[in-house]
Image (tube, rainbow, N blue to C red; front, side):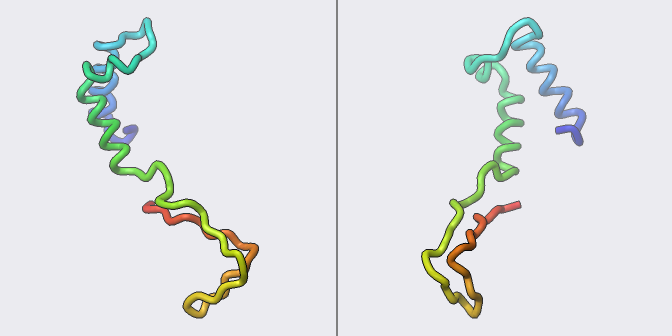
Length: 81
């Protein structure tokens, strides 16, 4: 959001109007802040918060498509970034 000042300003304005500066936000505030909710959902849609799978390991030395995967190595999960 730091690279789109207008969005940041609109989200801050909505937060200030609904919540103010004197209390902490709660789940019930979400329905009163549609713009902020939409921005959060768009950020979550755009970025990968978790890898697409769990790390994998092999139980014995394995040959796969002319590559040797040793038993001791772990394979990193795929990431969409």
